[in-house]
Length: 217
Image 1 (cartoon, rainbow, N blue to C red):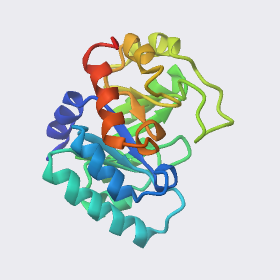
Image 2 (image 1 turned 180 degrees about the vertical axis):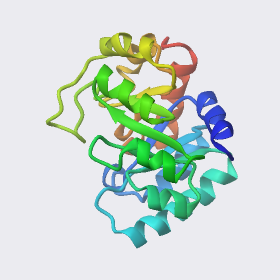
Image 3 (image 1 turned 45 degrees about the horizontal axis):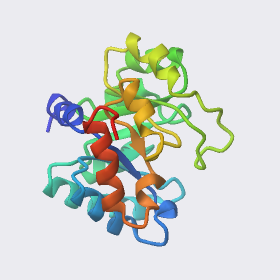
């Protein structure tokens, strides 16, 4: 798919699930991916910050095979090279990663996401060519324990100024997802709320139901 086609799939998706082996409760990332896809999730990120390039590539190829079979998007965290080599749909970049503008030159047809923590960062990422921005952490999160939560109300202060799609992440779970949906979040991103759940499929289905219901439980 080209960028416009991939972005259309992105816009049509709802729950965004980030899968990291360390947060899969002893299961493999692929086992959690299978259950996530079975729940109807069509937007997945593979996030393995401590893995070497070869292992990342091999896992990404497995993720690509399974997501492609169901028409789901695959985003690779941090590594543009792995995203390109594996045939993924996109890459997600942090503030200390490869600049969005450089990634856009190297990969004009990929979805490029950018982590942002303020209006200024979100607008800068948009201007640099990001396909979407993530705003967070919205709640306290174990993946970034030192980061100060922005609170769901921050979405209302940032998103009206954006012209591109946005996601939000950080401590989102079944108990609080309705708060970010009420602030306009169409693609809330979660990790352990699905990947560490006793049944990832059931957890993902419950989260999706709240998104599709507009925040009503």
